Image (cartoon, rainbow, N blue to C red; front, top):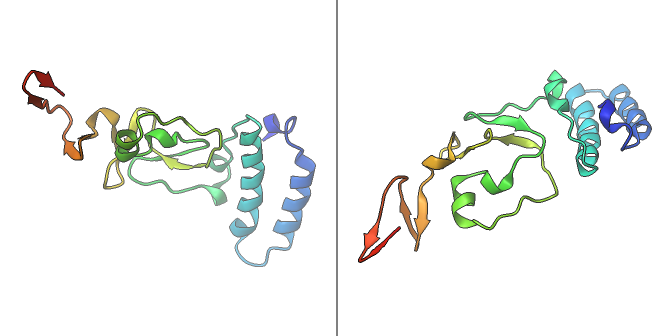
Amino acid sequence: METCANTVDVDSFYHACMFDVCSCTENVKDCLCPILGEYAAQCVAAGVEIHWRTTIPECQLACNGGQEYQVCPNECTRTCSNIANDQGCVQSSVCAEGCACPAGQTLDDYGNCLSISKCPCLFAGNEFLPGITVGRGDQIW
């Protein structure tokens, strides 16, 4: 988190973290992770991505279906449905960390990552499997 210390004041977070963790009576994860997450979110908002969850075992996220932890996943390519229904999507400047598929992949309807090229196409309310060519008259889609 040192690279963000020049951008976001670390002292207030340090003192809040010490207070939260020292007064924690139950699961340290519930006391430690939220304050670190808030610091990381402010760093991302300031343009500095930090991969803090990968270095703190108590705060790691379990990702399923081939997904991986990402600081700022691309919501435009999160699912096949996102891609099909919002082709003009612009990645938001506001990030929400979490699990997402690796670059070039997206979630299918079953929660598993697959290549974006394997997503079905939507046209006029109909779903077509990838690689299918549909023609009508002299037009091919």
